[in-house]
Image (cartoon, rainbow, N blue to C red; front, side, top):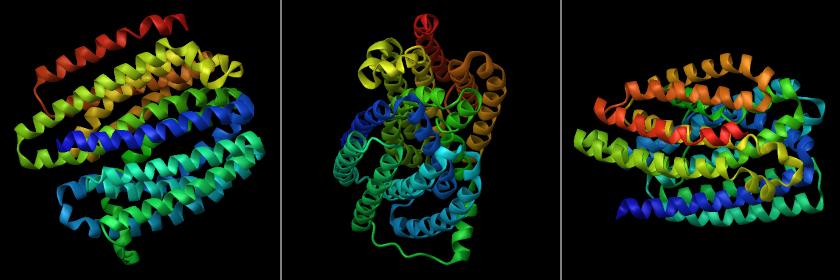
Length: 425
């Protein structure tokens, strides 16, 4: 019953955020068009990449640590928040230096969107504290209020002002409001945090290094795309790709729901006994494969209608990409389940190495596929990297060889069902 309740509230939070994103992003894309939308997303992608250092893997670490020792919640928050402030200072300094790699018309939007993404990271940090304490009901109320503010502010700005800079400012304002609400909710349940010394903060950064590296490699997905495609193909290609990627990332809110619920539960089951761990991992796998299949196939076979309804005639080139996005979505979901199991059972260092290997495969594949096949070539390289990561994870994960082989057979069979759509594209 408690699992169903947690899933219900967490699902509600994610549906609300998903609805907000699905409403605002198409409005922005239609207003700006592929070229300017590409510039907007290029700036946002670099801003998001620069916040990786600020986040430093704190949220997943909190979920695991508080799940193992709930009575020490405030102490974990104190150390993690202090470390996050130190990491944020470094992130801002590095951003100033790296902004020069952007085209001139993307630099000012970048400096407006950077604080927005940093604030978003703090909101996620505070929400992680609530999730680890299983207070999904409070997060759900906050998500509803925040999403309404985001939709109204950003959509009206896009429709009235219709400029890239005004939309960027709107993003920054709404993220400021969101972080205030998240902080108040967290302190009402866990208590008001107290910052620790610089020495303790840096020490905590050292403890979370594996989480940070894994988070960095995972967070690069969907963001580094903009830099690579802009280099090879220009801003219009970025705009088309990121329109599809926003749909993709909106769908991954379902993964966030499952991860937020199952990570602390799986960690607790691992500490209890092997039988409890086996039961929890079975539930996790079924949930991830099932939801990944439904959303992925919808993207693949509903490509034309989804593109027409969401983005309009200026984004018709996205139709050919959607089946590949769908296949990638399913494979990402299937792989993410094994990643959560590895984190819950204490194999975070292994996950970091595995993710680095994945990106190496992506880079090698992209060097050959992007120049020749453009946007589809980049998606093929991401799919190749994801398959590599799946194989690495499944070789390391717990469970019988028979169960792992059966699950791999199921994933392979479902993957084949995407082929007709990808061939037609």
